[in-house]
Image 1: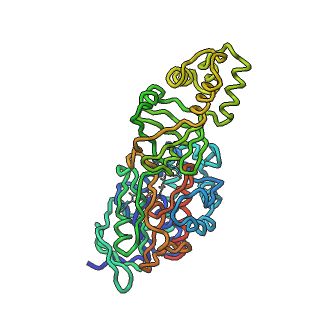
Image 2: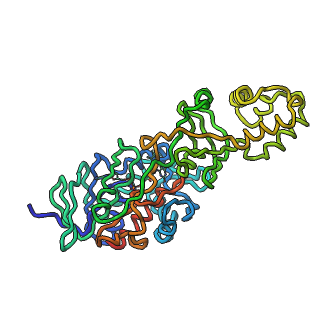
Image 3: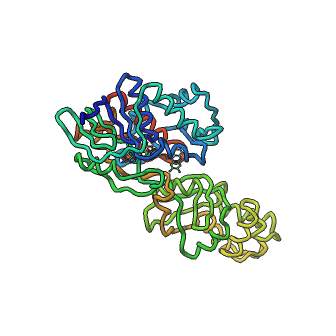
Length: 394
Ligand code: FDA
């Protein structure tokens, strides 16, 4: 059978692969896009609670973790949130800023996925769903792929297979295998932006407060995030927890400041002076839900009128509320993680072109690389920017 011979073959029709395909095709390249799942962009459909947090207006290189922190700068500077917003606006997709620069669709995430598919179609991308790639070999002219649609020969192969999170949405380790095959280092991977599991004596509290959230600052290993934490049946979640999970390693304690607007001790002393006859649980209900205030006051301390606390007792309460120490037993893992930390070492990839420095004509884009964004639209912005960068050179 004669091999198909497109200018470029892209493996993975997720966020990065779709962006790379439509951009390369607009440049006049003949693009073959292969996706092993039965739908393109499944994570886009699931994202942002169904409304796709498609970018963040305040994207900066500091919003990304990598062993090579400078790597993301060039691509991010050449394709900004405003470039993506322009495409979204052109397609008449309504959106809003939820908070902190996070842009969400007013309606469903599907609008973003369909926009990318429409752009691919208009530019002439040949997309094949339910198509697996079995093998990739180097040839004199480039690469020869064995696929479900037969052999494919191309001078440019783009690996856009994403990370390991949520296997039910099509995630595989294929990109890492190909990277290793062509001499790349794959840095250890682990689940990021993921809820914590608590199994120690705090488990009961988490279960009882399941569904309750509180404004807090979560800190670990020199990083801090202020957002909500959410108690769950299994432990802790919510944006502040998801953010800090990317910096947490097994055995680490996470410090949670439950009174982020106050110096805990000064606030308690002021409450003691102002309302000496009020019980601690009543005072705590000023800042937490009534249920949470009651449970904390009864479980962690003995709730009594404020005037009956000694200075030392008040200091203990302040220490606990201002710097609650939680040692998670683990995370919920790839089953629910939004991203995969680690991946293809970017030190062997060109930050300008996303091309392998080990094997010319091979490109890596999106989450398969060791570039992981914070929560809030940064991971999609990386997918768009890296896909766009590679598309200029394939
Ligand atoms: P992505 O995972 O999108 O695509 C990879 C594609 O490759 C998939 O279609 C997969 O099926 C395919 N593939 C894998 N192996 C293959 C193989 N062997 N052959 C062929 N195809 C293969 N980010 C954000 O910025 N805002 C948000 O709101 C959210 N929300 C969110 C919710 C949930 C539930 C998850 C799991 C993740 C998010 N994210 C997010 C993260 C974001 O979805 C993610 O970072 C990007 O989709 C990464 O884009 P990629 O194209 O690199 O991988």
